[in-house]
Length: 454
Image (cartoon, rainbow, N blue to C red; front, side, top):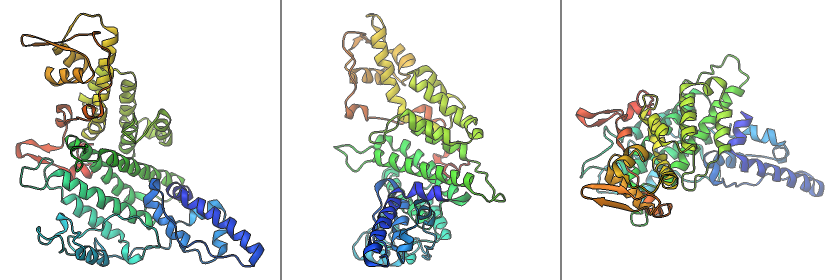
C-alpha cells in the first residue's frame, strides 16, 4: 500500500519532507515542533490522489507526524477520511448550483430551467481539492456505485442520435466530468485497491476508449471550439489506466496470502495501455521507454496473454510502417472493437508514412489511385486516397474517370494540423461494434461492463 500512495501523491511526499525539515529547525530554536501546514494543493498529474494527500497534510496534529520518514508518510495516506454523503451530489453543492443556475441538462427537473434539480438527478461535479474536504461532501462506496450506474444509463441505447435528441458529444462531456469526480472521491477515501476499485476503473476506461473513437468526427477546432477535446480525453484515459495499473500492482504487493489476487481483465487493460502508448497524441507524449515500462510492470502470464501479444504485434507493424500488416491485424478476428478504437488513432499516421515511402522508392511512373487506395493507404475509396495525397503536397492527375498519383514530381510534406485532424469513423472499426444493427441500437452497457466489444 505504501507504493500505491507514493505513486498517487508524489508532491505531498515532498511537502512532508519539507515539513519535517522545518519541524526539526523549529524544535532546535523554539522547543516543541509546530504543526504541519494546513493547506496543500495537488498537481495536475495526480489530481485525484493529490486531494487525498492534501487532506492528510492538514490532519497532522503535531510535529511527530511531520518528522516521520518518507516511507511512513506515504503509507499514512487518507485512512481517516470516510465519506458520509448518501446522495449522488452533496446537498450543499446542489443548492449552490441551483442558486447560480448551473444545473446541467441531464440534472434538470424541468429541461428548460437551469435552476432546478433533485437528489435523484443531480451529480457531483469535479472540483480541485485544496482544503480539508468534509466527509459530508464525499460519497460513500455504495453511492459511487449508484452514480456510475446512473451516468452510464444516460447513454441510452445509441451512439448516433437523430436531430432533436441530445447528442453523444453532450452526453460524453457530462460523463467525462462526473466520472472524473467519482475517481476523485475514490482516491480521497483510499478506495483504490481490490476488485471493486478495479471494476469501476475498468468500466471508465472502456467508456473513454469507445467515446474517443465515436466522437472522432466532432473534434474541437479553432472554428468549432465546443467540439470533442481529444487531447484532454486521452490525458484522462491515460490517468485512469495508470491508476488501474497501480491497483493491480498493490494486489501483488499485499502480504495477505488469503486475499484473492485474480484480476480477470488485467490482460485486457494492459493491452489498452500499451496501444495507447504506441505513439504521441498531441500533448500526451509517449516513447519506447514508457511502452516498455507498462509491459515490464505486467506479470509473465499477462505478458504472454493473447491481448498483450496482439498489442506487441500492432506496435511492431506500426513502428516498421508496415501498413499491410497493420491493417490486416485491425481487420482480423484477433482485434476487438475497443482495440480497434484505440488503433484508429494511428490510421492516418501510418497512412501518411506509407505514402511518404512510396514517393521515395517508386519510379516516376504514375500509380493508379485505385492501387494506392487499396495497397498503400488502405482507404475506402479513390477519392479519399486522392485527398490524402493532395494533403501531403503530392500531385494527383485525372484522366477521364481515373485518378493517378504522380510519384516523385513533388516532395512529400507533412499535412497541416487542420488537414491531419480530419479523422472519421471507418468501416473496419464499425463492423466490430457491439450493436444490434437491425434495431439501430448500441450495446453500451454490455460494452462498459466487458460483456461485449473487448
